[in-house]
Image 1 (tube, chains in turn green, orange):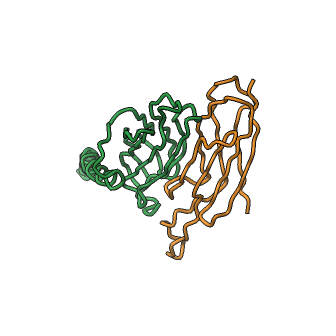
Image 2 (image 1 turned 45 degrees about the vertical axis):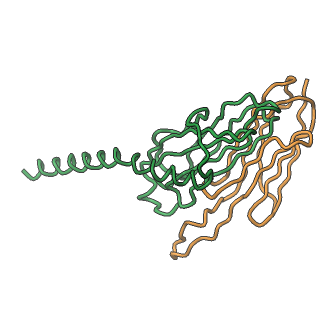
Image 3 (image 1 turned 45 degrees about the horizontal axis):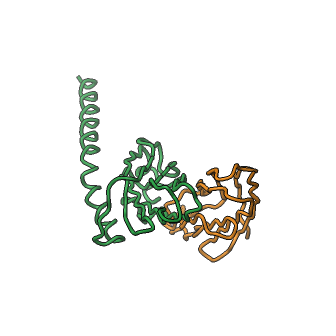
Length: 151
Length: 107
């Protein structure tokens, strides 16, 4: 009987934590947009044209590889000037800023970042004429918060 | 203090080729949010910027936040037009500068 109870408890915990994970994105999106509007004000941001690649699942948040690319011909007339990376759940949500000249040829950057928690990263690209584009990517961290609460 | 830096840049490129440049720096990138074993906050120690110029023109810049992982790796692209110098300048939060110059041959 006691064995059965343990199993049941395990199942229950798994079920509840799964449900909590499902709830996460909704909360994050709201925080995300207020964070980004604190940088860009009420300028409209087209939610396309930027591809942000992060692993969907990472074992720990100390070093997660990331690639971001903004679509652009990168000519002197039409190029990406800046890409900003936001991690709304990090103690300092502004991960990095990348600035480009037209001589870069491609507005693509790879780097490695820290995650304080599972979250949706957003990249916002600014074009030389001021247009804004964005892209997002969600990553679940399996260990970070429990092992190292302050990253 | 000069940083230990590794740069991967092709020795030569065809005209108008877009080449990938990879950089890796040995640096703790201490975020200033972690506690040591005594419970004291470990002071922030991070790099602030990487500026890359090609033939005197700025092509790429990174402003690092504390959310960049230790030993920062940054890979970006460069359109090879003519042979010339590629200059990499890292600056940390105290204004210490590390500068590396590489030559890119364009054929």
